[in-house]
Image 1 (cartoon, rainbow, N blue to C red):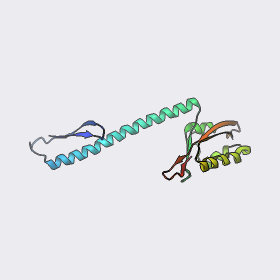
Image 2: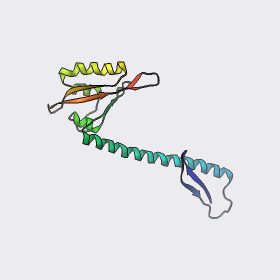
Image 3: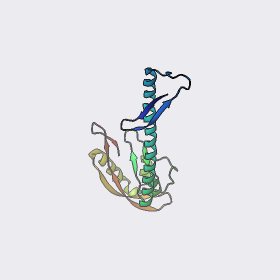
Length: 166
């Protein structure tokens, strides 16, 4: 038989073994090297799967914590204009999670008209100044209910100091 450890950069997580039932010396050094390479790839795939599962559990805990605390989060990639809202952010704005495609324009359309211009100026200032900031905004939910939400904005900068995410 021929066996190699399933190694990751930090630990050994198992063994990969093959066995030839008829020939005693069926495997060569080349076979060992190949199996070792395959074993390393399998170990990395297993570790990546474990990391994905751990991330999913962490995301579920975060979503539950946001639901309990009634705190939402959102991200806006200012380069691609892609927007992400957490499920709780959707609920705070009066939408069921996944009910609507979220965009920056949807966010602004939910801001009370009397506060929209100030909100746009605030967002632009956060990006221009590259500094975190807070603002209380009044929103109007689809059912007409008005709410005041405390909004916190932070920026993510690229390696050149340009804003890539708000």
